[in-house]
Length: 219
Image (cartoon, rainbow, N blue to C red; front, side):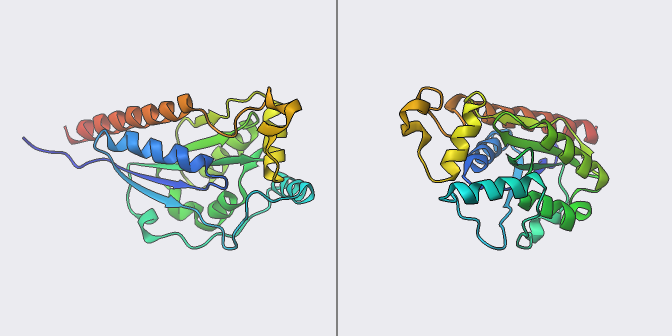
């Protein structure tokens, strides 16, 4: 029996508080369960961004800068990112309606080299307000020459506006789930167990799809 080449997926992601990292690892586990080879690259800011910021003022400044799409310079990517892949997943959180500063820098610096002529799936970890982020990201990817697929969106399970208030306080160094006025609205930072199971399932569904494509291409 003739074996086809295993599909290869490259996941490039940025995660500040660890939320996106959790999603990525499970997505990769789902892909690997279908025999897909996965390469994972974490985007690292050149100067460490501490989280939480431990002050309301610093959090506000950060939100303002990200709202105006301030780039945050990143360290060079490893060579593995520039090999041939059947699919590239670009993942990260929404910061003030936009992709995060490090992802914006990545697009400026490596966009064409990474994404030209490639199939790219955006994965967004967000609270409620991701549409502007998604639109902007897709536009940037298309400008780089990518073939952009549907996005994978994981919204934090806490409804707005509590989610934003909670994340803001958490960023400023407080524990919103311990503040009595907030606790009933904001009981949990980040993604729920159901969502983590769902992202693994998404990975295996994507893996099965890629395997099917690989077989079709060979026949």
